[in-house]
Length: 414
Image: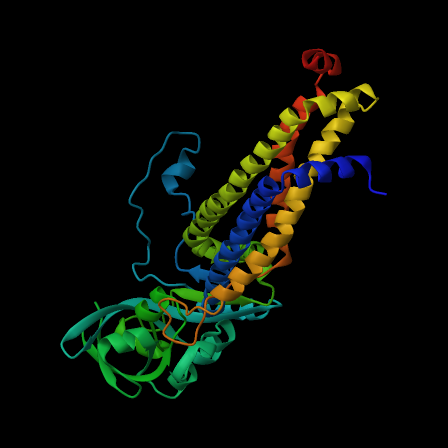
């Protein structure tokens, strides 16, 4: 036999089938939209994170000093109020000093791969048009150990830079904008003066606009010549076997060598903060549908409490405690919530499957579809919010029912 609260709850809900159905549909719609939209956001953000992690270093060392060394005046008067501005480095040629020794030390660390880089700005000229880009001069053999850019190559290869002294690897979208293709020659001009002819030996497509249109790769020696900075590197790219240790490893490396060393979480902190805001807005908007559904549950149970006041009084008079009355109406809210979660899970799965068939907007590959994550955690979160809303909406009128004085009701009815 079913427990008494469940028996009474089902009788109440079946007596108002239309209102019950509307409440269940409200919860189902909220759960379904929550799952579908949440899966879409997780898919997009997961793809973006994976592209950042795979095509960029896990840790980036630059030739900056996070905390400049104390100046003589500060050392002379350590307790005084001293303000020093416009501190200039002793060596006007910026770069990572002792880069070779640093690379050797990093290579000796377990689970760490490092590659030297010279970053600089340049103008690519073709057919009378100029295109501003960031040029990364790389040692190909080392760079291949710290980046997965090779998987995003659509024509040519990154390794071709090792055999082509004036080779150039750039994004497919930038090449399309320039009207250039594999094997074509473009002219690069830098602030150091002079122009350099570069031959396109590879095209990549990461799906990240900033990467595909703003960053190009050349051999390290070629970049040093273009920037008039012989034997200078200003970045060291580091890849870890365990990316979860990027923050403590970066702190340890910076503490050892002094140069600013940032984990990818710090480098892309602005992007990650945008993701957090996006999640807040998205889940807040979809969660509001569940809140509206909660008002439907509140309405139906409040109506039942008013209509069944005499029945509640009789149950109280035959010995049912207030907590038993509360249990009846909480079970009603729970039944509506569970039915809504089950139906909403099916709706969410269907919407997610439909969205996975839609082409990804802005994708260069027409076969690429929307990425929609379907995880147990997402379904669990949607179910938890729906059930919490249903129980919360049922609890308020149930408390009123539990406080009913049977004598007042019976006297009022006579």
